[in-house]
Amino acid sequence: MQTTWERSALASRPLRGRARAAVIELLAHQSCCLTAQDIFDRLRAAVSAVGLASVYRTLDQLSTDGFVQKIELGDGTTRYEPAQTGGHHHHHVVCGNCGKVDAFEDDRLEQALRRVEQQTGYAVAAHDVVLRGTCGDCA
Image (cartoon, rainbow, N blue to C red):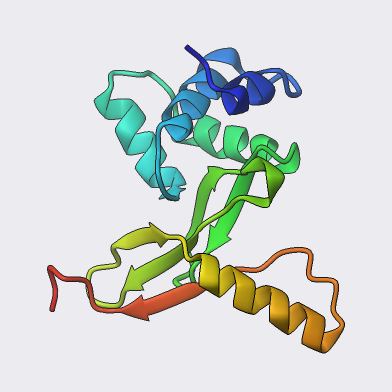
């Protein structure tokens, strides 16, 4: 069964069907961001004959169409995850040793960010919070 995100993304501008469908299917089942190489490796492990260039083209098009969000965590590698509707999103915590990335949500953090918006008078369109530290495996 396809999610709403998958149906919307599949209806976007035409791309090579197999690559587009494979990338969308994989992203729809992820809880956090992935690099293009991660996506390619996972598709390849699932015996999908999708090329790395097709993965990049698909991600670029899905990003342009607003279905995929590009995530920059400061390490020079772009990551991708489905864009969430209704303003729902999560933030990321990154291990400085092994590079592991995990997602987190915090309602109180969101409330604090709204207070900052009110205090500054800015109409904030988007925000990214990236916490850096050491994961439990590396500690």
